[in-house]
Length: 307
Ligand code: HSE
Image 1 (tube, protein in one colour):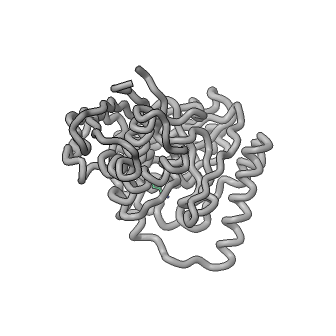
Image 2 (cartoon, helix red, strand yellow):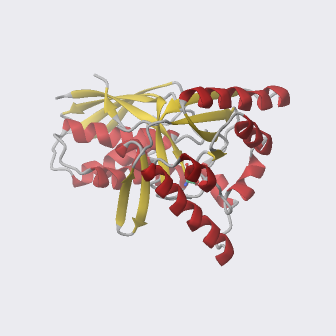
Image 3 (cartoon, rainbow, N blue to C red):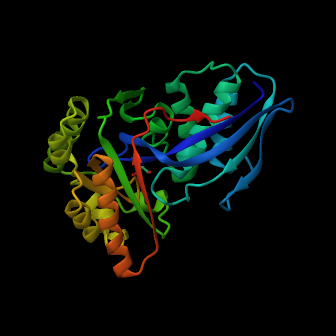
């Protein structure tokens, strides 16, 4: 295979109680990339549609993640990349992660899959480091593995695939403002109280258990964030009203998607997820802020070949 076209899914990181460790992949929104082997060494980004992002591979997350892979690959050639960028940068649904994960996943396919999924996560994290100054894996891991993933440890890197309940659907509303992950990390405190820690790891354990046992009530009780949401939500207009609207629409719970400004909700069943979307929309219609809404089943496959 000399060329591959890849779908790279959008992702929701943190999922309320799992800051920097938990994430999930979406199905209805993602980027498309064409990756081609070249005789010429190195990486060239030849086309980016949809967004104004650097073509210089050293400055583009897809290029940087790709260089991390190339440095470990037994391969004498290079790659050319074309990106159809559907996910807006600064949206909170893993824009940089989709490019980073898609690049290394596609390259691995073209080389005959010499690298494991975990190795691909480590390469893609280099793209995240360029975008947000921190090599977090909670977007790239679900983009590569699909479903929910838990980063059990960063050093050594250990990523666990978490079961996805069959009837779980996500709703995401994206108010059309840009929040850079690097900026929304700067506002966070660097230490937390033991009391907040107890609440947070109780909820994270509850959420993981609820996902594995398909216990929707437990998932609902566990979708709480006592540490990051109270601080970051100040950057998101109408946040508390959108949360109330999600609850009124029947969601199991809601919170900030990644570093925002998108807000996600999880629901049991597609019908409820659509209802939640309608309810959330009303808030931004009233405030007069443009928005996009995505309703999606959880993508259990991750990056995939589309041609
Ligand atoms: N865990 C990261 C953060 C995700 O919240 O900063 C960024 O999408």
